Length: 65
Picture 1: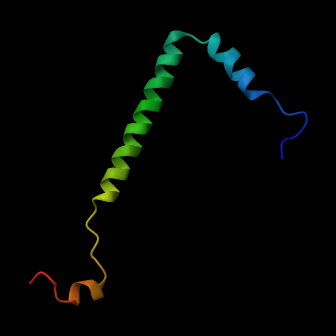
Picture 2: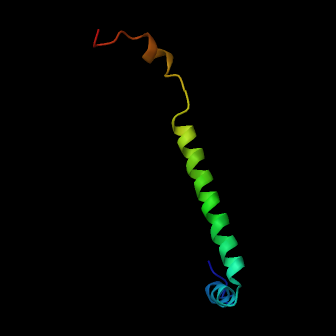
Picture 3: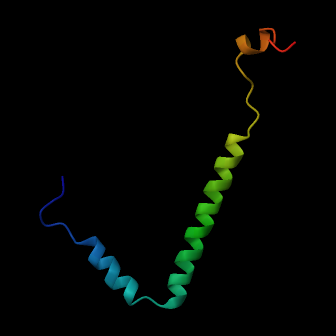
């Protein structure tokens, strides 16, 4: 539930970003891009990690010979 006297964050953010220097905005975009790239690399690494299948899968004979 939102408090009735909460701050309008979108308005504050819009005002602050409108008055921010280009260098600050560049740094924010760069940081965001690096974090996204790092998260993507982490997801790729965990998706291709070498996890052994369960023992019951390894012990069953292959239907393909």
